[in-house]
Image (cartoon, rainbow over all chains, first blue to last red; front, top):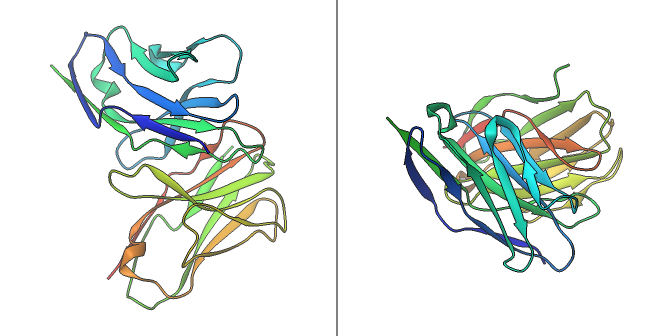
Length: 113
Length: 110
């Protein structure tokens, strides 16, 4: 069975400082991993995905994530936070041929001036 | 290109009423999914479909039914709404990964 643990329910950073959102996963097989972002009252937008190619994955809006199999982690980072990055972020795992996703509980990112 | 469209966007029901949520996608995707989102719980899969005419149960299927009569549409039904079904419902579609999401339906059951 697959599962995802997002280690922080809430992260607060100042604008212009680095962002780190932590995610650990559990999977019986070689998983696909994703980060989605959800702005208030909106649907989910894909930030980036890992599907067994390069372990460092670059996404949209300057985000990137590194797949570390030995640590079963897939942390999301950004060098410099912007006010528009304030949102809910979900780490997601899939190992299923029907492409079913298992979501983490989310991390709310707050960006302050 | 609209992507994934959910109808309605908001709805308030009384306990015991029934309703159907509609999801339509214009990307010719084979797979479609219904999720519910509750505070602090992420998204949980209700039902999904791997093709026209097929449906399968997800993690939290009780109290819901679905139908996929046409490839582009996936309907979620509540036969007798309960307050515990108050949630935000998201539809998604895909061929492989990633899934594409609609903007959600906010449903309140009084």
